[in-house]
Image (cartoon, rainbow, N blue to C red; front, side, top):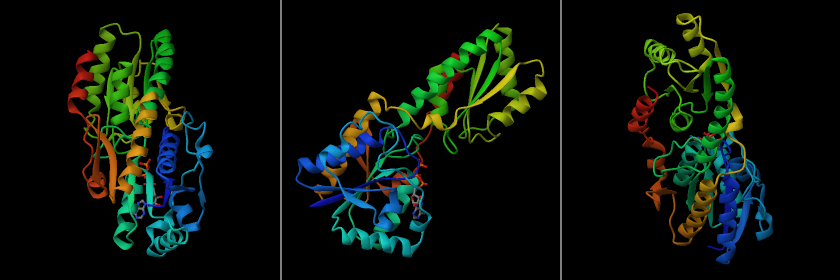
Length: 323
Ligand code: ATP
């Protein structure tokens, strides 16, 4: 390994910068020249690739977003697009690539690897925590803390006015953010895509809260819940309980931004370092993750296909604690 390229792809997440820094510094430590590939697969296709020095990653460990920028690149779905990417890898003599992203990024890397034999290691960088083969993805913990901070503020105003708030959080296909943040804020109910939502059960829960003289009620709704987002659920609640002062807040993209938490910075640093070491050892087509505190490698295929499953015990815990 003489030259290694690194890019960030798909949805950005806090801690991606810390991961890039770890990749760059580990390369330099091992006398490997690191290259930054800008805007994910688009940068590979367009040849937007530049050599990086240690100072290029100074003062970024604490910054949200990604200084390499990210993109969703349709052209990489096409054989011709991937061919162009391959030619640019050859042109820059890159011996290996570190891809930081989510399941889409690894799906692309897996397809690319079947066509062109370039060593690829993936780092899970997404707030969704929906990848198999790692307990946590980079950005998930920061996103959780952002949600908790926002909902604590909503709780203050909700309590002052005896209101019911439905707070929508990110999670089109997975309820990880909803579940953990819901427990963290002491939500009265948590609605996730993994389990069916029954409006009558939700109403019963809210009514029991009213009977118990709760001054405010918070329902956390994952955007991909089977009954719809927070606005749709609010309409149903209003039909059954017109007397409730019901409000909706959609947290949206604030969940993606912000300075990464301590947990995300350390995770990103470990995974960035392990990814480069893996390339040096000749590993390829693997995602590096942390399972039970240890560095573990999982094939791209498994990381994508075997969905990370929601912890049903935590859902039960939330129910018990909200009675
Ligand atoms: P997040 O989970 O945060 O959304 P992601 O990595 O899943 O991140 P995607 O937009 O799904 O984000 O994927 C990132 C990029 O990976 C796409 O823009 C595309 O360039 C590439 N990609 C995704 N799926 C494929 C595929 N089937 N074939 C080739 N490339 C793909």
